[in-house]
Image (cartoon, rainbow, N blue to C red; front, side, top):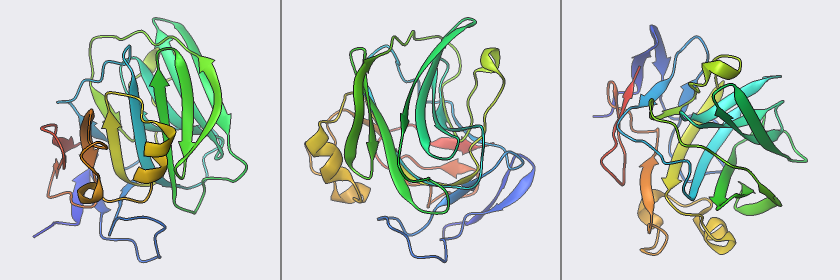
Length: 227
């Protein structure tokens, strides 16, 4: 049986399905906050120098700063000032970023957000629609920590920035999705993906099926650990 209550960062966290109706395919979600720590996926190392896509459902609460949805040794994927999606990269003490500002706030409502990298081109997804200019950004891969959900590890550029709110159905591909694929995958469960949509898929974290301290990867072999 699924254990919907787990200890994260020294605090007991209720991971039971949300009571409010969801604009989403999931039956539940996981709550993140600064006091409740973060989940670290130490088994997965994403080569940020290669092409990739990240999609995640988010329901944030007020955060005037940077809320990291996914952090990596070379970059962090964030919601900033409640309505901006940002990718922020660093090489040593030098950092750069690209930001897309959405007309609506990501607070208190479910949104699927994402980012895709094609060469040096960066574009963003919101609810299955691709936005933003094909802005160039160089990401330098760095050895060290793997992917973290809900917190970054880039202490050289201001310390850890923690996401506060609910997350679920986070997926990572080692390729850029086409705009048509992004639209098709929006609002799908993992078992509803077509064979072509799973091409290049590294991991799919439902975040509604956490059992104790194990965070299952529905697709690959990168189960996470709740810390």
